[in-house]
Image (cartoon, rainbow, N blue to C red; front, side, top):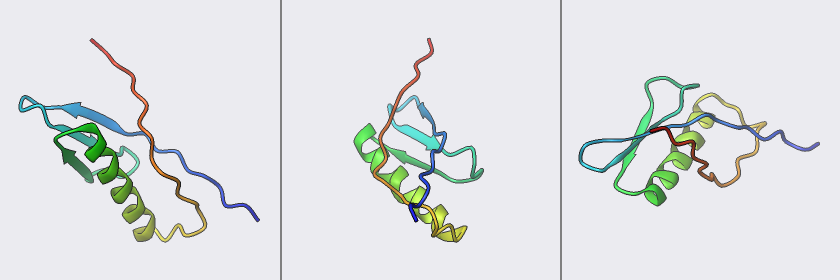
Length: 73
């Protein structure tokens, strides 16, 4: 049986220092910060893996995160 894949919505903001902050609306209260987008992607991967472990969703498969952007402004 193939494990289903999950998609998460990630909100990314850049602060006045130039750092990036990301949150996952499906899991309020959890966020990560990083100086660049590559590090942010790594930290998001770790965060989502942790959230899946906490929620005991072992039936789902995790693949490497990739960032897609929608830009406003």
